[in-house]
Image (spheres, rainbow, N blue to C red):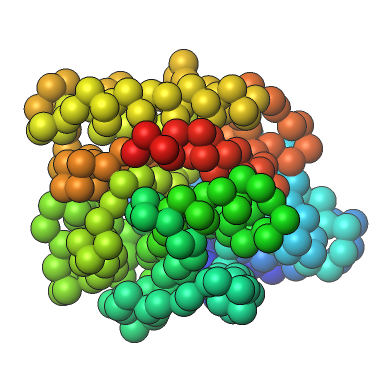
Length: 376
C-alpha cells in the first residue's frame, strides 16, 4: 500500500473499499435517512510525486446520477486553492464509476465534490462579521445536534430582506456566495451597499444546515430531513432549523428572499421562482422577472435560458422555501442555483465554477437587488 485515505474530519465523507498500490476503490456514505448520497471529501496521503487513481463506485444509485457526466472533481494541496482534477465517469463500470487521477505535489491532497466550506470557516465568518460596525449576531435556535442557527442582521431600511444558504449542506458554493454577499454589504465605501443598507434590513443565515455540513451530507439534516421540503410544516423534532428561521421571518415579515443552492447536473447559474403559488400577483411575478433580467445584464455568469420548468397555476410545491415564503408573505423570492460543473457561459478549465466566482456572483445579485428594491 502506497497511499492512505482518511475522511474523519469536518465535512468528510468517503468509504474505503480497497487500496492497491497507487489506486483506491471508494464509495460515498449515505446521508441520514439513507436516501441521498453524492457529496465526498477526503484526504489522500502518499509520497510526493505519486499519481493516485481514485475510483468512486456505485454512483448510478446516487442522488443525481446525471451530475457525473462532464463533471470534474476539485483537489487542493493546501485547502485554500482548489482546481479541477482529471475526471471521467463510466456508468457501465461497477454500477457507475467516477475515476479521478490526482497527482500529489506534496505528501497530502484533499479531494472534494466542490471546494468545502467547513464549520470552522463558518465560525470565522460569523466572528468577523459580528465585529463589523452595524452588524448584529442573533442565534435563532439550534440544530438537532445542538449547533447554533446563526443570523447576521444589518441595515436600517424598512424593506425586509432574507438571504439564506445551505439548506442542502453539500452545496458548499452557497456559503462561498454568502462570503461575497457579506463582504459587499459591510463595505462602508461601496455605494451600492450603502444604498441597500439605507433601504432595507438584511437578515442573513449563512448556513441553514450545520449538522449536515459537519457530518458530510449532501442533502439532509441529522434526522434525515430534506430541509427544503419542510417549509409547509416544520417541527422541533424533525426540522428545527427551518422552524426557527420561519418563526423569525414571521416576526419581521419578508419583502425579498433568496435561497442559495447548487445544482448537480445543470452547468448554468439560474434562479427558480415561485410560479404556481396560490394567490400569486402580477406585481410579484413582474419584480421576479425584472430581478432576473437585471442580474443577467450585470453578470456574464448568469443566464435565464436554462433552468427548472415553472409550476403550473396552483401547482407550486409549498413545502419548498421559495414557494412557501412567496405565498406566506407576498414576497418576491427566488432559489439561486449555481453549478457543481463549470458554468458553460464563462468556462474556466483550471478552476471550474469556484468559491471566488460564487462570491463574485453574490455581489452582482445584490447590485441587481438595488435596482428593484424600490418596487418591493
